[in-house]
Image (cartoon, rainbow, N blue to C red; front, side):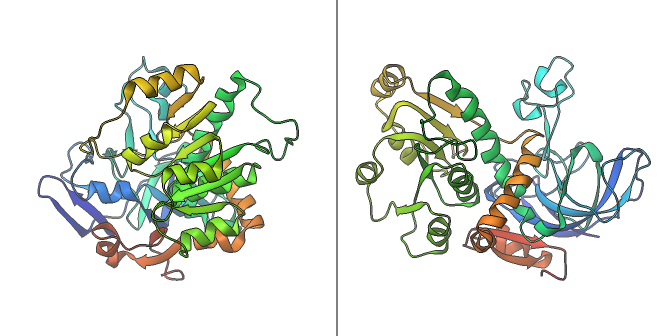
Length: 374
């Protein structure tokens, strides 16, 4: 069967043939892969900046954002059946018995850093026709979400970030008097930095929760990203036409900033504008060679004197996947056209070069093994 693999030692990316997996253990599931989302992580791996093959292998099969169909289940699997659609969890626990996070099933907070990740670190990914995986790492998806379920994994980043946000902001009377159970963010201003999939899905989450939401991104409007933002009732502003200071005048107080930009200097500039009791959430991992200077004394002064919170978050825990699937259902009911617009195009696997080795543009591009969607 076909697979897309990176060979770090030879600095090579190519389409390979490998044997079909055959043996399904009692708690395992055989999956036919339908869609694999391509993101910045995949492209970074293809520059050989990181990415670790499994032990004993000289190559790593790419792909961590996946949607598959169950074609066989082990005898002890209870929650899945043949024909079910599933989305897998990416990160797997480390083996250290002293890692409290991994032993509690919260490998997204692994203390040791020796976790494995499908398609990234130590485990083959999903950019192949079939895989076998442990059922505990697979999340069922309703059939009606087939066309958008590939967005689940990117949405889990926002799910984890905002779960932390709600917990942290219990430190003060943050919610407004007119907040509702269905819209707890009513009356609070939220700024999203970046209009890629993680930023736009985060914006959908925030609008659905009642936040007054602004998206600040590079591309001047009109464009597909701005169209999504406007369709969900948020405000899109381009950094090419509006400076940070002008943006701050438009928004007013920055109460919540959700960063999904991968542009450290701009993010730090916005951090200086965070308001009193504000919370700033970083989700991207910028290039460490992108060195720049900041006024550290002023930044620390603001953090202390304004009771600010800065949160870094990466990956997502098991609970975020069912939450993301539930929110995709909400988004589909509320903004069906806007949600579908997040998926720019689907490509057959043979066109992997177009997505991994060049910038195909758009929002979310997908490699598909499903002929009905190719």
